Length: 69
Image 1 (cartoon, rainbow, N blue to C red):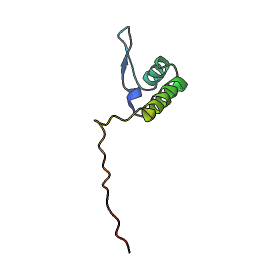
Image 2 (cartoon, rainbow, N blue to C red):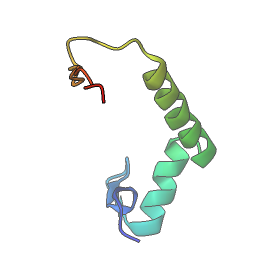
Image 3 (spheres, one colour):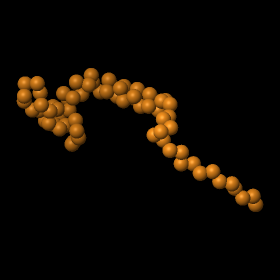
């Protein structure tokens, strides 16, 4: 498997670890998979419930009158 979690990681002592070892170290630093997933879920929930910023979002709805039959 090739992903960013498997990319080379330099440890404090200067040595590099690669692949699964680097992935395991990153997961451990994040507090484990359950903690990482909890952070992602919480931040997504907060983002979805945040008040919309009118400056960043554009209203793309175009009103039209429907012709009667």
